[in-house]
Length: 501
Image (cartoon, rainbow, N blue to C red; front, side, top):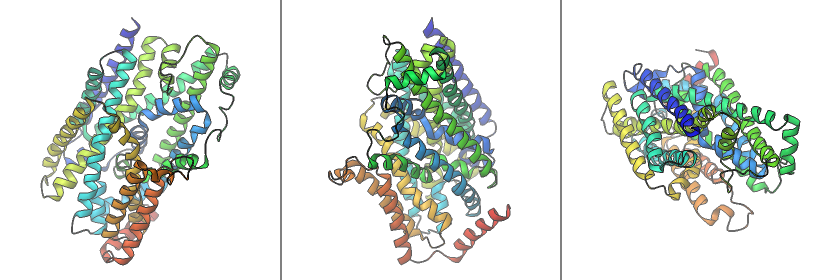
């Protein structure tokens, strides 16, 4: 009977996502609507959509599990991400929204690079499109794997059936609803995640004897829980904080900035987005504390995932709530997984249609882009599904690299294109390629520890971002300057933001 209640709740959640996708389908008329929502996204929607598509299962499972095992020393990555997201909203969002419209009404990051820097060779746009296409195809696959593993561990069902169910629902609402479908469902999914991370700790406080007793029991279980440095080296802490650098180059996040109604909406979006992140991170910390306290008070029980403790949220939800309510709370994990998959599908589709086919002169009419976009979503999803049928650790490993890879490849170019008049097309291309290569080599070889000189591996986004930035600047200084009209557009975008135009 418990399983039936949980399946009913998850079924209701799936139906709600499909209904939202149908609603978005009716508001999608052409290619710009499908890929960017017609640049009419409310900042509340943009903020929650960016947050939900960013956090994925890490917020619901990875962070609480790491905190449960090691304590607040694991919170540095959350601090880095929160600061990075805030800077991204405050500094990058208004300029990117304004400049992408001025620069040829660009609706993808690669097309913006080409228009902003007047790259007549199209190499920059094609290279950026290929980076997005390749990495997000594997990124989407890893999300589908996570969905299958979730169903297998939570409901005891088949991995393949669970994976196909999660992937199928996500593909349907993304295929028909496009960018708006992904964004609207992200809002609901973001709210589910936030409410769940509030509900579990609050009920746990009552069950464990109140806030004081819950904290006391947790610290009995792990006396070093409150330390921010216990067991960690400076290299590890710096690397965790550096995750925040990745925000500037994540296509599935910054595309929300491009879709805002105006640059003025960025301030509202920053307030909502950072508020949501802070609440969710605090909820994840309290969930770990609740799990520690409950297990200390009930020594006969243990977490399902005894190795990584990533089931702490799932286990506490099922222990503390009626199976029907627990089912809706479990849907929060699905929400985290599915929101990320849908956003990545849309960005990958846009790269394929707008940047690769567009560069080849295909799919130029608005209606053609709409249907090419849907075909691209289906093609990428099928490829990702085939990869996910046989979950491979090497695919999952790409998730960690993808954040650093995108941050190193695109982050410096995004910042320089918005804030430096001297960036050239060849400088951007060289910086993008070098940043990605350094991040990959650093992360996959012994160079990451400087061949044993460092106590821990330094996160690859630090050298990748630094090299990408330095190369972009140096190459720009020795190659032809961008034309006057490109500089005039940058000045126009800055002037319009300052005047509130």
